[in-house]
Structures are given as C-alpha cells and as structure tokens.
Image 1 (cartoon, rainbow, N blue to C red):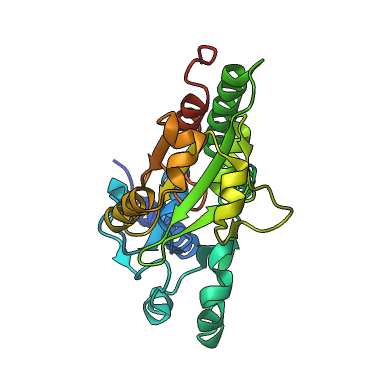
Image 2: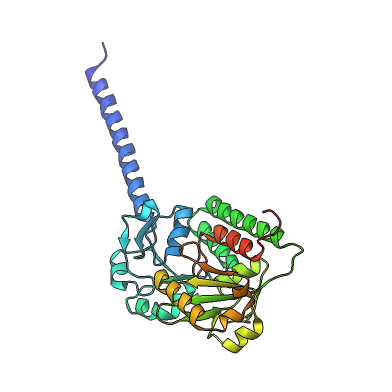
Length: 297
C-alpha cells in the first residue's frame, strides 16, 4: 500500500504543474490579445484590401457599398471624405489608414486629435500592388498579398494579349462629381492608368496632375474614339448629369466616340477614383471596351 503522504505530495505537485501551465496559457492568450492590431480603415478600398488579407478591423467607413461579412458589425467611423476623428480615437487604434488623395482634406483634423494616420497610395495599379506587398509584410500576410498581386499581374497580361498588334484607340476619361459637372482624368488617375494598361491612348496625358478642368476646344481637337465616364460619389445623380450634358452640348455628338456608340459608364464598386480590389474585373472590362475584337483573353 502506497504512503498517503507520498500520494498527497504527488497530487500537489501535479496540481502545481497544471496551475503553472494553465497560468502560462492564460498569460500567453492575454499577450496575444494585447498584441492584436486594432486597425481602422476609413475608405471602402482599404476595407477591400483588409478583407483579402484577413486583417482585423475595429473601424470601417460609413458607405453604401456592401461591406465584407466579417466587417458588417464593426463600428462605422463616418464618410471617407470626413470621418469622425473623435470616434476613431475612442477605438484606441494601433493604425488608421486613409488614401493619399485625401491627405490634404483631413490630415489637419487628425493631427489636432494627436492621431497619425497612414495614407496609402492607391492612385495606380502599380501602387496598389506595392501597398498590398507592404501591408502583407507589416501584418505577416505575405502569402495572401502575393496571391492578390499575382492575380493582378495575370489580368495585365490578358489585357496586353488583347491589345497586341492593334492600333491604340484615343480615349477620354471623365470623372463626374455630384453638382459639379465633371473633370478630365489624365493618365495619372486610377482609371487613366487602367486605360494605359489596357493599351489605350489617353488624349489628356500629363506629367503630374491626376485631373484637369475640361476644355471643350481641346476635347474636340483630340476627337476621342472611346469615352469612359466614371460616376463618382453619388452615381444616380452623376449618371443623370452626364446624360444631360451629352444631350444638351452639341460638341459631344461630333466626337468619334459618340458617333460610333463607344461611350461607357463606369459604376461603383467595380470602378472608383482610387485603385481597389475590383481591379481585375475593372481592367478586364476596360480591355474589352477598348478592343472588342481583340485576341481572346
């Protein structure tokens, strides 16, 4: 018969070990919880990127676009053009992301609340690829980021095959704004970049500027063969504005694009003013508009 004292000591030792192990596991879980990033995405494009990389978000923009399932119950922080800095601060984020095109618009408001946002460059497809790679490295999501970059590269290759050995069409890109008519998008805009990747010739190429004030004389002289109209911010209103402009202004009827019925409306969320994770679909569509009889993709 075993010594009761010995059995007691063994039992006590086992309990102590289990207590240490259990405490260690709890401590590890607490550390992991504390180390978990708390990310706020202030634009829909950034939410899309976060979804593809499976990043944890504690704040998302207020948007009419359908949010990915994993973020549908996450706190809304307001319109991307004017997010609530106070609400963002209350979430105690480890990182706040916006886009470079909005830096001047509300960078000051963030600074006043001692919040330092990261402005991601999404002005082109190449910058989107770079952003994906950087975020993948930052949050240990390299395989997921590499997969998305690979899909984008494949879309570019398909567009190149479609345009091969064909004459590049002259393309005019317009960005409509609610109540403000429209702007001309250059090759430095996101949609302008899609045109370039698809093998088109933007009739308003610039060295730096993304958008220009429209000049009817210059548009007539360029005589675009394809016109792409981006309905931005409030699509229904902007679409109606474009219809009225093209109906009432006789200039448009003189362009090759209107004569040949090659005027196309670009709708959200597939198309936007900044690059986003619908880029593969968007590039495929632009490629088909520019080269409807192109090589099979």
